[in-house]
Image 1: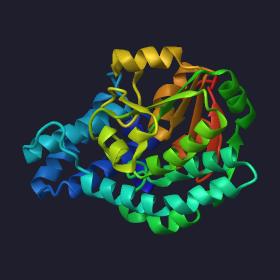
Image 2: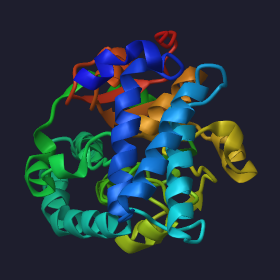
Image 3: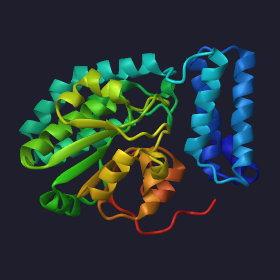
Image 4: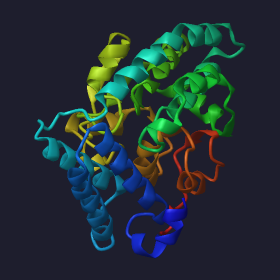
Length: 310
């Protein structure tokens, strides 16, 4: 964060708190893609240029992250669907699956299976190599204590009321690995709301470690509910840049459950009471945006305030 603070004035286009994270994520992606030093310098230069461009052009952090990924793919001379984080995603899915039975048992045996399932799904949001460096995440340790993380904002009653009245739940997924715990929660949702039609939406093509339809197949989510691509190529859901199918479902769903930080940032401005944001707060900017301290969980109904100005 020290670099971030020193460069606040130079990063006024996107939120200042996000600039160093964008650069760090670009370095991490270049490393995972095994770029040379010269290739990495070009990618970082592009990221810095896009940050500068954002001062005068309506660019989101998600646009810049996508641009970095595309630049890396071009440097490697790969096809557009090349998955920079493929190995990490497979590891995340596999490791999370190894804990699935343990947490399924905890959910079933708890006093409130729905709320325990919700907590497990929210805590699983720690598996995020966009918001955190891969080397800083001890997945085994995190997964062992998955159901111990507290909620600091918990709109559970309006969420339950929404489910009582809804015929369709749109479940917008976030990360690979994490979707294993989404699957456990969805099983409990199906048990308690047997008439609720659940559709899980995933990314259209690989970006960071976000879950795609391929990841849904790898963990069995596609065998549980209808899965669709949102059409989003970003680490988030920029609604005008999604498919007509997704937009139609987004407009008609009785309840929308939005997982993770990228979806929170991009869907928060809609101030839609049908949306419930479920995530773990991972950085200072997100803490300010949600008014919740870092490392706590959030279940927040559609936000009606204003975003902080950068």
